Image 1: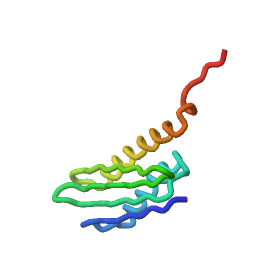
Image 2: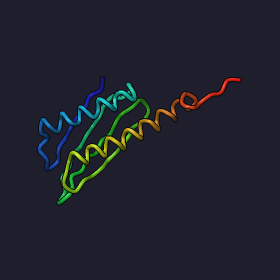
Image 3: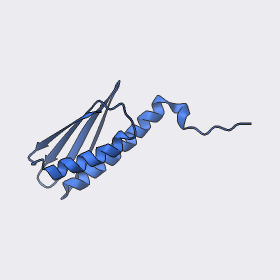
Image 4: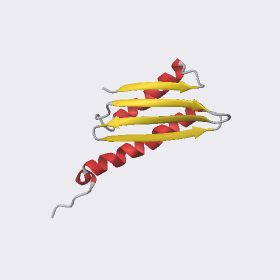
Length: 105
C-alpha cells in the first residue's frame, strides 16, 4: 500500500477533495502495485487551479501536472489522466514483451 500526501498552497484541502483524490488513485493503483509514495500539491494562482503529483516507483519518479481555469476537480482529473498514461508507458518499458501479440505457428 502506498502513502498519499496532499498539500494545498492557497487552497483549503477539504474532505471532498481528499475523497476525490483517493477515489482516483484507487483506479491508478490497479495499474501497478509498485507505487511507494504519492505527493500531491494543489495550487491556486490568480485565475488557475493547478494540481501536481509526484509518484515514486522503485528506480523511477513520475511527475504530472495539469491546470484548469475555474475548477480544481477538472485539474485533478486531467493530472490523473496524464499520470495514468505515464504509468502505462513505464510498465511497457519495464516488460516490453508482455504486451506484444504473439503468433503461434
